Structures are given as structure tokens and as C-alpha cells.
Length: 159
Ligand code: SME
Image 1 (cartoon, protein in one colour):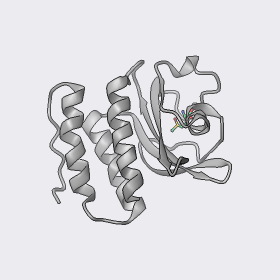
Image 2 (cartoon, helix red, strand yellow):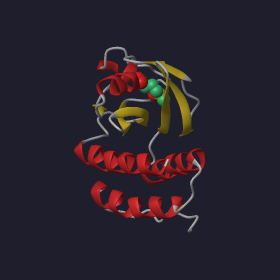
Image 3 (cartoon, helix red, strand yellow):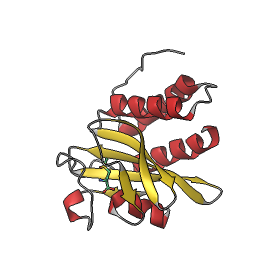
Image 4 (cartoon, protein in one colour):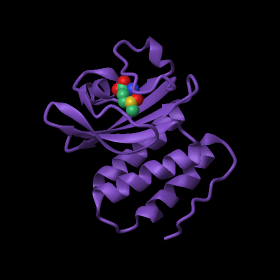
């Protein structure tokens, strides 16, 4: 396993296409869920310089903070609350161009301007969400949705 990411210049799509095999190699046949999700968040943040990347796990009627990279964050989020809780409730990828325009957005940090939340779905049930935050407005688009969803669908098979 290489312990350095190779970060390429190029389009966002090319960057994801370069990053995905590296993340898969980094995780390799490691089975520890926390180790794998921790390295996943570090790789994604380093590759794209996102402001915050992390997981929340579904525990009963709440989301509970999991491995993340970035500033300290809210520990628990109720179902249906904020972008994360709404993504969980709807079992849907949510892209928010301007968090101030999302009713009920939970501002863990006032620096976050836009975000994408991707549910991790196992046997039809959301078991966690991936939250990625940006300091810029409208950072995330259909390309992020496609590749982050692909990554989350794969993560579900290995965690
Ligand atoms: N903004 C999120 C909360 C999580 S933090 O940004 C890390 C939300 O509205 O669900």
C-alpha cells in the first residue's frame, strides 16, 4: 500500500477517476471499519481540499458522528433534521449550493457554504451518511454525486 496519494491536475471527473483506485488500494483487504472510513475521509479531503469530510452513523433515531477530517462537528443529528438528517430520511443524495437557503441546515461551522450528503444504503436501509462540506458556494454537482455515490455503494460492501 502506498502511503502517499498521487493528486493529479485535470477535470473533477479525471480527479475522481484517479482517486478511486487509490482509495481502493489504500483500503485493500483491511476489514476494520473505523480505520477504513478514517482513511477514506482523509483521502477525499486531501485530494479535493474540501473543508470537512465525515461520516455519521445511524443509531436508533439519530445520526452519530463517525470518522471525519476537519473541524470539530455536531455529535448527534436527529432524523429529518439538517441536510444529513434529511438525506437519511429521504434516502437520497442531497446537494446544497447555499446552506443558508436550506431550511433547518445545521451550522456546525459558519465557514461551510455548500455541501453534499450521500446515504450509505445496505439492504434498502440507510446505515450511515457521508457529509462533504465546502467553503465555497455551489461546489458540488452531478459529477460529485455520481462518484461519491459509487464510492459509498462500494464502502457498504466492505464495512
Ligand atoms: N451541516 C450538516 C451538519 C453536519 S456538519 O456540517 C459537519 C447538516 O445540516 O446536516
